[in-house]
Length: 131
Image 1 (cartoon, rainbow, N blue to C red):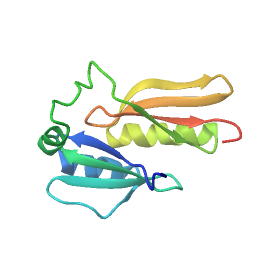
Image 2: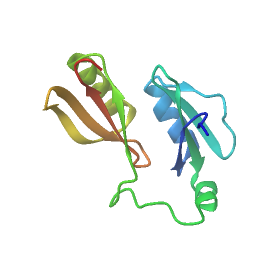
Image 3: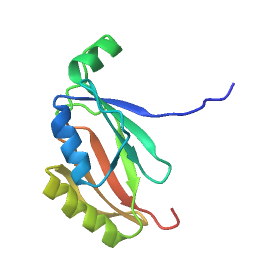
């Protein structure tokens, strides 16, 4: 057997706020906006992240979602073309209302910073030579 596609499903406590945040960052919508879902495409491969209304998400997983102020579910890494581009994303994320949890810094051969979206989902932008 071979898997066809992989995507991520996350919860949102406010779909309008989530839509505004990722739109302000310049990510393209996936065209799947409903009362229970907003969806975006990430990277050249168009990795899909669906953001479901919290109640719908918890109903699907048959449990409560993680408390993202105290716990982590995952950290998505997004590649950048240069350290300067990482810094540009840093400013853009701050302007859009993202919470910086890790200031820009050198990381081994690369350069990175980390942020959480308005619901606490964690991401980092990373420049890594050769990536």
